[in-house]
Image (cartoon, rainbow, N blue to C red; front, side):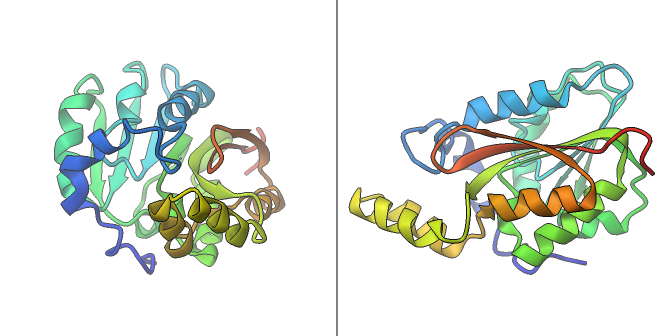
Length: 223
């Protein structure tokens, strides 16, 4: 299944601007960006022998943080231009491969199971039903005891959408208002509840007003 808005979020035209853009953490959308990526890698605890899947690898800012000791890294992104920028950053990973694909559709391939699945600032491009389908696919493709580590733009609950838009509109942050209105920020409370329903043990950490990290662990011994 291909996600509904995947072509809208193909960032080929934005690829050469992305790395400069994420340096501007005074922007509410970018606040906490690098701390969240650092947390993601520390939390994933990738070690020798680990098999890692990264969904939405973009320009390689997260991949570059993955230690070379891991057994294999499979990166997925729809943007070929972002992948071109990523390659020099990830040369320390000899067992890295790249799949140019939608992060949902890629699970139609025989990927096997992973010790860790990572995704940063990508899942908010999926509508709610697609997020839930993704969570199931992630569960199916993790080994028992495996970890899914997400970092993304989130609202704590649906009621925050209008209040956050009003807050940022008053502050003159029109681009942030537009992002909240047009993109599909996680509804954190609902996402956590759904992940736990699937069977994950979930931990949440906040990095800014709009950015959160979510660790979803698949209990060991679960098939």
